[in-house]
Structures are given as C-alpha cells and as structure tokens.
Length: 97
Image 1 (cartoon, rainbow, N blue to C red):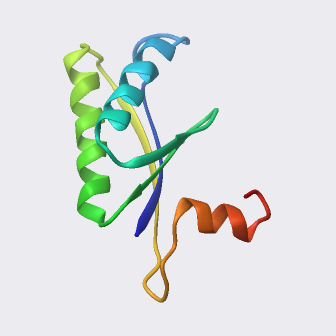
Image 2 (cartoon, rainbow, N blue to C red):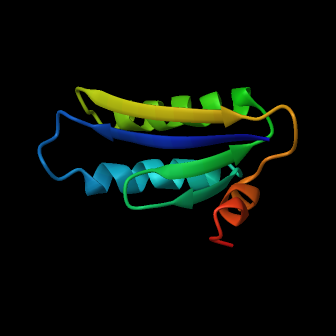
C-alpha cells in the first residue's frame, strides 16, 4: 500500500480558497481511494504510486477547469516495502486508533 499526504490549492485566487478545496476533495472522494481529510491536507491510501499520481493529476485538472492561474501542490509519499502499511496501521502505531 502507498500512503500519501496531499495538499493542493490555487495561490492566484486571493486569501480564501475553500471553494476550490471543496472541489478538490470531491475529486479525491470520487477516486474510490481511501482518504481522510484533515485541516491542512488529505491522506490518501492506494495500492500503487500510479493511483496516487492519477488522483493528484485529476485534482490539478479540476483546478484548471475552474480557471485558476497558479496551483500549489504539496505531496508526501510513504511507500513501505518491508511490510504492509495503511492509514490505520500508522495511526495505531502512534496510539490514535
């Protein structure tokens, strides 16, 4: 499993971008991937890196369709190969599940 933390938003649309973030969250939810949205980013769990990159590309495309002029993307990826890692296993490891 690949776990990623994604934050994507326009920087060209003023100080309030929540309407754009809401649209991006809809794209992530429609992807069928497990996702947990927090205050500053969304954690996404996928079977492979390609699925993560596809959802990032789909979010980018949505912002372009909304007419934004500049997009900021933060993406952190954890692809653990020595054992199965999930959102739940990471939360359990820190006592949050």
